[in-house]
Figure 1 (cartoon, rainbow, N blue to C red):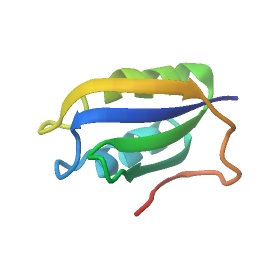
Figure 2: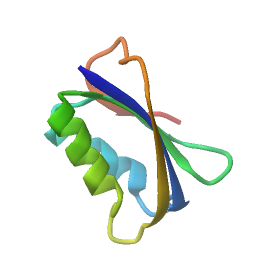
Figure 3: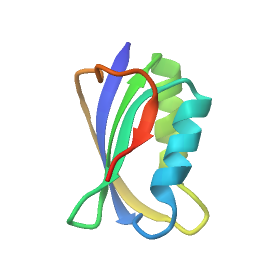
Figure 4: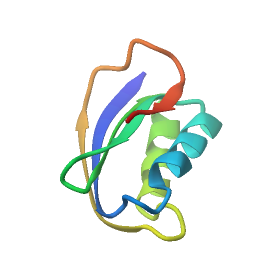
Length: 89
């Protein structure tokens, strides 16, 4: 299992990015979570098969229609304890 923590920066809050990411991650069979950060970025923990994680990263570089992704920082992480992909407050 591959797990990565992501910090997605740009115009990513208030454009449906978290809900969009939950749908895409679930479609790919990934586990983890996504949440807004106080600094305007979106943070996520994504875990699953390497190909699925990389596909989600590719999709995240574009995001939903109204998003403007400037950068994505990624680092290896420990997989979440729970299965499924959820939106956090």
